[in-house]
Length: 288
Ligand code: KIV
Image (cartoon, rainbow, N blue to C red):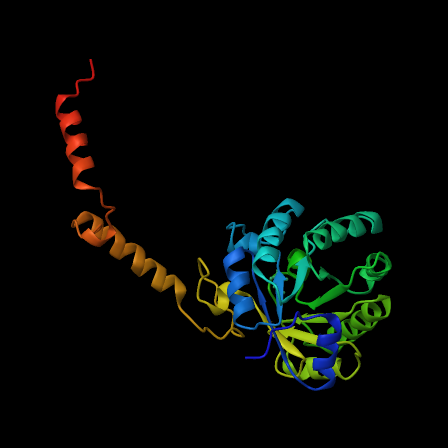
């Protein structure tokens, strides 16, 4: 088997040049990162979606830098080869260039290879400031969950000429500002294809069709591990882990109640002579 190499920006650019698609998944913990690494996944996003998948928050708005630091620390320990993108949470980059650079630096110091932020041309100066600090920035356009309230909910983007023009203006602005690659979320495939014609850097999609340089999916969605009523149309379910977990938990409970667990093979043994001494001592023992 060929030795696995760390995925870097030149590797990603090379893959685009050679028309080879990349695989990208979210991870928030050590084990998932290790499994992604061992499966040969190219990139990991330590997404602020972890606030929802791991912490049960209703949206990403209340995710903090402290949350992202915990997720990132765990993921970095699990992955040796994936290109790791750290997500800047809400209000960690919107206020000023200085705060954006400081928080991006914090994620990089933990071991990320790049940081991601949401937004278009209004974020150009943030992207340039972070880039000037030597940190690669990934742009996130289309459906941007941190602006859910402004967007009016989880809505498909780019469905009108006005919306397309805004997307195109935004992506060209963030590319000019220094974004090393882009993530486009929930845009019709035909619209993504038109955007793709105009960008130079790799363009990856989540729910944006096939005409991109690679796909991102939230690992909980593709594993069937989401709690509640989450079933995005664009996700292919590769497993139904919540059913498997619930079934296992149910069997465990029933085994305990029916004295089927633990069995003999789960017990630790003790030398007969030692046991005899313990029993003798115990028989004579009195607490007072
Ligand atoms: O946090 C995340 O997982 C994301 C994706 C929804 C793109 O930003």
